[in-house]
Length: 347
Image 1 (cartoon, one colour):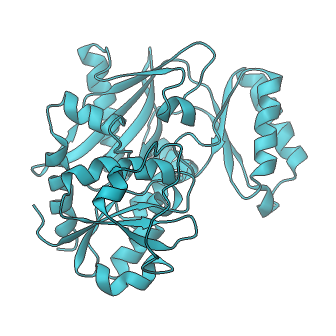
Image 2 (cartoon, rainbow, N blue to C red):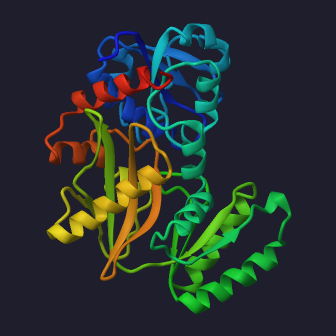
């Protein structure tokens, strides 16, 4: 295991800051000697004691407000301190997964966990990821790119017209942000009322690129991948089962409303193998590092690729820890592996 000072970085300015705090609450149990650094919504960086982090209530609903003064106005101001550390990235969402944070670490040779800046940027942009996946013969849902209104590439009436035609042809579609996670901004649409709610969201978030996808009917699976003892392995798949009238949005994913998560998924050997093969293929194609998790829809024709997450959630209830448990790999082993890989990433 790594012997350098370890910084657990969490929080952030993105909409996934609450999930990040819940992940950090879990991870710090396996990093008893680490320093926990919290980034608040303004980008200021705080030292947070392990006790303060562990005792923060209802992290999926309540923003952590540190008791101390900030150490710095932004993370870059702490570059000299970080150069003697290994960073365990507990961030999720934009600044954790879009590659910019990784670029900063790479430019300063700061060891960190997770995929590099290139893999992070590609995977976080669902259009880029699917374009690369299509070139490599991944089974994919048909899609439609909906550029941000702020870019003025198309008028909103043009976008409405294109989406209406796409919906008329496909009957059931998904609209979601191109670069966001934790199911923020996700709309599953099968009637005009749902479509109008999605259009309202697009207008409200005028700086976001969106995409519309054909809804693929099947079983929703997600499969983690990690490098362990030098070998890339796929973990047991998980399945998301929705109650009637619900979708796998933030409330379903983190507050348990209308969803059930089954790990390991009830699949036969062939289905399990094909799901794991797709996850391994995605991890390798995108050149992920350390670990990843790939979402897919299992159909009668096999699994269809949806997206790959370069920093999967690590809360106590998240899929990746569930899958580690199903594979009989304890979280401590996983954390130690990721730190060792971080320590050697520039060698």
